[in-house]
Image 1 (tube, rainbow, N blue to C red):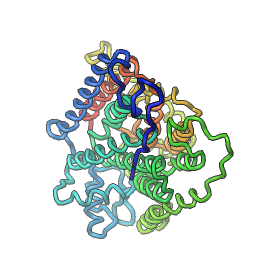
Image 2: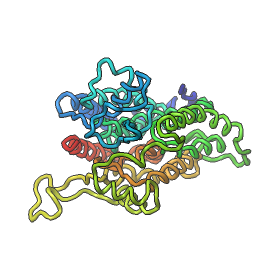
Image 3: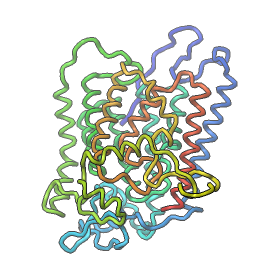
Image 4: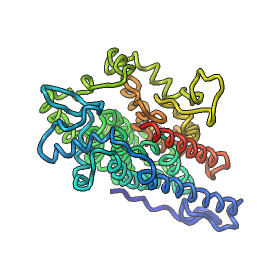
Length: 440
């Protein structure tokens, strides 16, 4: 599916033969320091991987978010309901005497092969399934960066930042159905981005994007990224300067993308119609909610401009809270704790400041910003903000584009500050993940 283009030969004496591979030690200032930092990168990555492996073994995994295992069981029997779902599970819809899930159905389909060994009374098996997709996601992101021209040490640091230094880490470690859906969307978006930068088969890009929409509808708003890339024709850093010639609008590619989108969307519409009698009714507006704050927010509309201020605040400005609480006379160790409603992106991942260094003249950078802003539209107008969570979980629908921007914006060569900010992101994410595990 993804192939990296061959790299040109050496351009000058002392330059590496292949971009991204280290030059001879004599030509690399501070080569010993660079080697030391490489070991730090590998060590921290190993710690993150070990943490994920040990999490479902030694830390509690509760059974309040295994909706998709129930859906998988019913789908395997040709049933679209989730009538066996325990009543304590929120985010289900009771309609005409049956229970349904408003969540996109694709993750339930993907979990069907796990049914012989899966226990729906716990999310542990969903966690392990999520780990398989997370390993695939790390590989896909690595390939995407290569296709984008990031083949030096930034590639490793950006990959660590993505999977160890964003809210993705907590999502993978907790693994409830809502979180598993984000993992699957990440897989499909990265596959679509890789196809766009690689073989550029527009119909396959549309299929991946449609499948992402079959998981979380917000992913469909990433369409401008792909149309821009087909129009501008850039693939990464090697195409930093857009072509001066006016390119015709990519009508053919747009048509093929639409054709790829059509199959998953037709399935989604049929799924909705079979359950609720309307192709546009997912059930979200009728979902059972235990949290009174969310119920009150829903009264303002499923999507509404009224939700924008709070969502933007939580996504950008919300910081950690006093521990044990804001009215405590004396704070206790660790003195601060995450907000259950989320925390700002830059508090969770301080390394994200480098997204603003990505060269805007690059078509890929332009497309990434389009993808981020377009997906933000349904995210910040939606009534719910993902309670209980660490970080702003819904941002994961556009984080793949943010992390490409991060990789392109990291300094080359990497500086001490850039490495430290990535490591700080990992520390914050580990802290928040442990906190979240204690809550859910």
